[in-house]
Amino acid sequence: MNCSTSVQGETSGYSARSERAGRAERASPQKPQCAAARHGRHGALRRIAMPECGIVKAEPSNRHRRPVGVDWTTQPEPAPTVLKIAHVADEATGNAHDRFRAPAMLGGTVDFDVPCERSESVKQVLVEGRKKGANLTSADQPAIEEAIAAPPERHIRHAARNGWSGPPRRAFVRQTGVVGHIGGLQCLQPPRPKDGEPVLITFCKAGTVQGWIDEVAMPSRFSSRAILVIGATFAAPLLRILRFPSFGFNLFGANKSGKSTITTVAGSIIGLPNEAALPNLNTTTAGLLQLAGVFNDCALPLNEMALLGSKAYEQLGPAIYALSESRDRTRHKASTFASDIEQSSFSTIFFFNSERSIDELARQIGRERPGGEKARCLDVPALQGGRRTVFDGRPSDVKEEDFHRWALGQMVKLREGCQANHGVVFDAYLERLITLGDEVEARARRYADAFVQSLDLQDAESEIEHAAKCFGVIYAGARIAMDVDILPRPWRPVSVRRAITRCFREAQRTARLGDPVLLKAKERLHARLLDLDLPGREGVRPGVDLGYRWTDGNGEHVTIHATSFASWFEKRELTAILTWLDRTEALRKANPESTPSGGGHDWAVSWPRWVKGGKKVRSITFRLPK
Image (cartoon, rainbow, N blue to C red; front, side, top):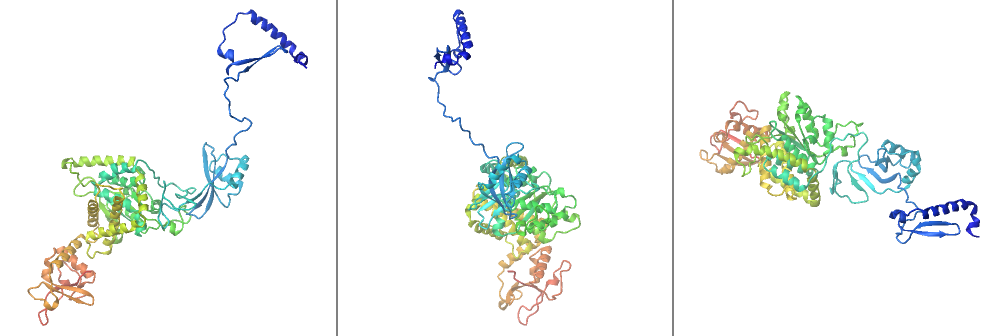
């Protein structure tokens, strides 16, 4: 069957039109054609003649065609609408969740947690997802069912709190991430945010470790107060390792002297870039304790005590005790921060800055700070040696007349350095602590003990001993930071010890803790007893020797001629040393009931016979301090 007979009825009109068009084309002059017209849009054309039908068909030529390896009969499968991305365990509550991911209403994706007891319900997953802004409807139920049936991509364990994780202390949890590693199937992450819980503080990271060293640590060497706060910040993670209680100090002094600047220096270590990022005291005691939980195992720098108002001490006193006890006992059970007693504990070194000392704030409302509270939080003067800023060390290449201007410039540079470099140095320090392992505790104890011994506190009272140990821990923090090259040379151990000792002595005098007059009297007594070569009782020569030594069941005693003993001291020192010997039950008096009166020392004398059968001698007799 040929084409003309089969399609004649359908093609006769088309053939006539084609023949007329052909005659017209041959009769008309030829016009030049562009390549596209000659060869078609896709390249050269080849003509296929169908003479039976009078039709000429043009098709693209295969000569220049490139093969395309696409199978147009299949399509890629669309990505799942809903995914189960993790199984989540929360240490703080003990609860478990399944974490899903879905498209968000506003674009992108959103993650949401569904408690495990409800995570196999399509309806509950849909409800929780829409609550968090997921773009899900009832039409997505098949996708939700598929996600529920799928295994989680990973297992996550959210730490109960920031700080050291677990007794081995191989990982440190920060808001910005986890430093170190805990082995096992689960991936450790920072605490899981709770619904309705406000973000109390935001830590961040920027710059480099070397940038912080060059722009912050190096200029800080010329300020003993900056050395103190840097040492305290690096010491805070050591408290739990040393099993040492939390403590603090208050840096007080004139306005615009650099107190906030060096507080910002401490903040830059842990990830607070500027003064605006520092937490302040415009809060209640309960709020302050909640904040301390966020800063667990970290330093807690607090700005602007003036925000507490004229009756600041009424809030500060209880807060200092609560912070020092490292336990939040004020949380209400209904609070989103409430948890069991283990998770409520925290460890921190806190420090304030203010224009007034805490002692002065207490006296302002007719109160006197107890010695125990002073030992937990000493007032440290911000200024030293008549300087007008916190910089009390002058570089050798800076003239005295240019020093104040130089110091002001350094304060500006410190703030700029903190803004550019913050947070990264603390992570590096923690990594190196973890690498040291069990050696950290041994080093820290050795450094802290060496500092306390260097103070030469002979028979110090318990309050001053505790305060000295606190500053010893600060010294240990600075020394370990030096050991791991966070504070490299020209930071030197002897310079750091002198700076922290200077801060301690100034704080001791300011707080009248351990009475500086008594301290001086103790030093004089210790020196005199070392110089004297006192004979035993059997060999004493009245009128020649100043006294003698003797022992009984209570220890070794000394008897000194009263006039000679009094000549060793100034009047206030004599009263102070005799009162202390009496209070410690070391003094032997002729009248056990006598007490200090006036400015004399007659109440403290005894009348022993120095030799058998000899005259009684007016003496001061006391048991030697250990």
